[in-house]
Image: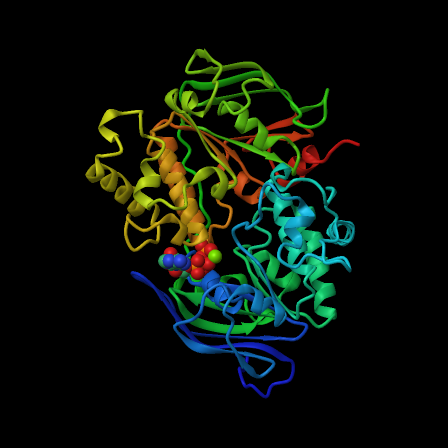
Length: 512
Ligand SMILES: Nc1ncnc2c1ncn2[C@@H]1O[C@H](COP(=O)(O)OP(=O)(O)OP(=O)(O)O)[C@@H](O)[C@H]1O
Ligand SMILES: [Mg+2]
């Protein structure tokens, strides 16, 4: 069933008609239309770089369209900035976190629309109270007065959600709100979505997790290469139908690993501890031991707060003072004081939060790709532009990164394609041990398979990989062995044959 875009249709709140938008070298949107209705959730789907975020940015007043029109409750509107869109009742949860680290949670939530006292000063008490109420509804247990920088990526994402909800908009755009949050947080968000729908709010929802659709979506639209492919009622299409619309062909079977015999041990960790950054006397990582062989993928599963990210950071030399234990790389004992030493020894970490730690957004794809190699080999010095370009082009081809050229600024790539540049940057250092923290966050279904295939190829060439993922099917598909963490401890270890969703989840749940 095609969803009608007839303006007379009841309940229509927001309509985009024939929107086009070009950036230098890219036609990001070509005559795209979308209709959202009161009390409905309209999912917007498509591969990385399809143009989803661009369309949402136009609806939210971030930048104008080149052509086409936007109708709000049947009236033509044009927003010059996000504030005008917000005042018209359109709120957006941005894909990339836009929060300011040195402000508090409440200050971030009410930035630019702070409640004022009668004398015109910012009413901090009220702001903190209102923020606390939204955090409570979202079941996020942090104080509204905590600095944003003290929060994990997933928690920051929840604050971003709270910010949009607190605007009480009639249209809420959610651009991959669930890519960085835990399953419990997803459940809370889904519950709130049902509530918003009952209150008559219209929602546009972007996700790469198609399993979410039956739970929340009423209808969906698929985009491909900046063009409108089609719209359907959510219950009228199967998972395979949707994937076919997204990629324009049938996808072959799910990824499977080739089973090469792993080689010699490349990493050993004995009794690693990391003290907790805030709670004195407590540990973020507690007595964790593990080993990794060449040609092997070790999966690390855990819920938020389990210490997975902290474990990887410690191995990458990020906490030399707060950590203790024994780390051996290729038979040699090491204790990295910083990331540089780790990189030089062949240990690299592709972090979870690419914007903060993985990439320099104001530099090109080429510059970012060679960023971590600089200083490692003289031949790859900053000035050797030809080599830099050649290196970057190689990875663009290998990972199918969608960019008009290696000179494009990373800021201008879509979220999923930025993630591919993060991987390229670390692969370019030719590491022995690759630590991956949520490597396929925000990556579309097809690109995920490409990344798994790439990992497979790297493993065959002798790399050892430690991969943290909160997606169980991903861990089960990719890892040779799996360790499970809970509250800083290693609570279980399984071979690929022993592991299943149930025993992993059981080991991941906190004991009290
Ligand atoms: N400011 C910009 N300058 C240049 N190109 C841009 C800019 N913003 C987006 N693009 C390009 O427009 C295209 C569409 O990007 P967009 O971010 O809308 O994709 P998306 O569908 O949201 O993908 P993802 O699932 O990876 O987030 C991409 O090729 C991207 O590189
Ligand atoms: Mg996007």
